[in-house]
Length: 123
Image (cartoon, one colour):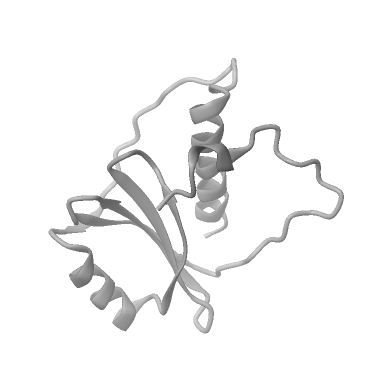
């Protein structure tokens, strides 16, 4: 779970930075195959996860003009999941895990160098 959470943070940081500042000079693009559970619509996936896994959507972010990502969680069972959604409605459960831990921005941390609000509010 720790790895999943760190990956989600890294991806969101990487996606945000790559859209505005470009990737780090020492980075390489690697395609990683992984299994996903997909449904033709978000509703059926969310209904199933509400029963088995998640209580609510805790965050979303726009990945591209046609896709976004949802983070869903159940704080009572400390479980979470990452869902990839196309604007046409197709939804895929990409990652899920337990031992959910929340982190706060450290006091005194420098602000971001890029103003993300210039691009809009996302999804």
